[in-house]
Image (cartoon, rainbow, N blue to C red; front, side, top):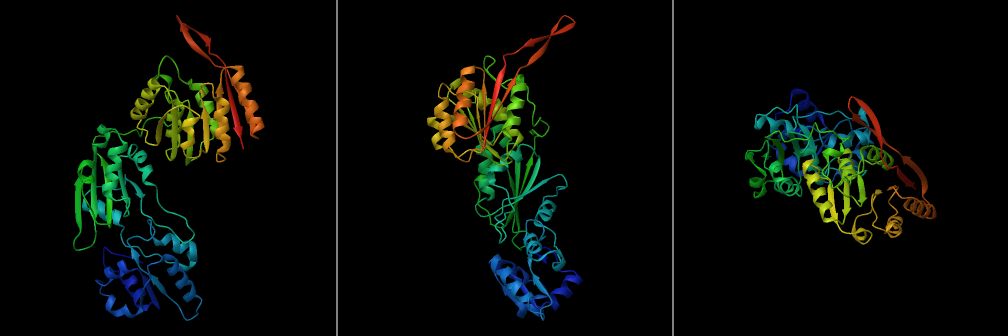
Length: 415
């Protein structure tokens, strides 16, 4: 039963009066003391702050045939990042009845007089059930969502508070984007000392807030990449030097062969202008992409492309492989676009990182092809090689002819 924002209706009031046990936390109990039903049922209330202990208690009591009705008091809507999911998972839908109050998100939008049917709803709150399943996103994923949606509302926690969210926006997004956001912090909704604070990220980052809050972020200037293509960027849309870029057709095959996961770590070694990194980051916003590049001019291209496409899950690593790889987190996927003559040493580092399930290399020279296949075979990878040969049309007057590009070998190792 959710409480917090409005009196109990007749059905909920009757149920709670007939309950054998009423279970809740200290915080919710303090709130419930303001309800008219409290004095009638206070002798049946148990405050248990550990969710695992709550589950144990309920399981013990429902095994007694004399127990007919247990009420757990939660906050707002128990099915919106609340206890409802855990109760249904533990006891099944037939044994659970959900009686929601309005959600804090709903009330927050009402307080700032904004529609919420077009908002993305997220939770940074550390809610977990006894099985260890979590019901939240990582704060590191937030900038990616902010670049795609004009309006986001989220539940926070002590660590991921409004100030840290504002600082993250300032640290990870280009300045002209970060300052286009307006943040509304709705504190202690439903309490007598409820408070609404609004400002830009610079203002909010300097403030302190109660742990009980809802944050709403709105893009005021329509600076959004929502309509930009997720996959299929053209070479002329990616800033690069002297034609040094993985061609569109080869890039599409390469990314397909990488079989990118939804989450994880991806290394792009010899990233160049970052065409593979940019597309990979756009396809899988929760994937952490590490673009490794030693050339200063290409680092500049990488940085510009990251900013132009609003990529927030891309880390640019300046340095030369394989030495620079040793301190990076273990990869789930690896692409080698350039090795600087260190292919065997790079492959040796990757082979030691047992987390890597798929490795893809592009090669133009037969020597690179042979070196790559030989190493992957000895390392126990299952190998597949494709040759991509592309001819593009070129207008000659009113007619078209095909111009051939150099063939590229796409080498895939899986384990």
